[in-house]
Length: 83
Image: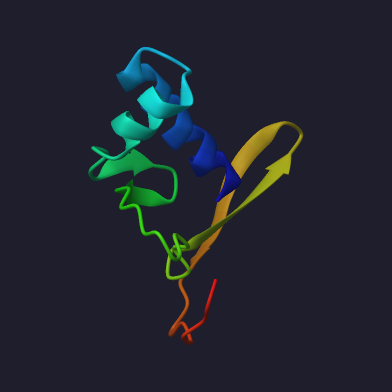
């Protein structure tokens, strides 16, 4: 998911036309179904917790510098948790 986090931050900075944290946060607040590597991504700020534990995990392998999709893993259920 790290790569998608970078995709989302890059989109926020591009939309904000800035790297200023407040401007990027405002741009991210408007993010809706952005096509990130892990799938459509929207940003919804939650004061208590902002963890998307039900997102898929994408597994790739890199052999001789070439990326190959291996599998997509999606949790069957996510137990309740506190941040």
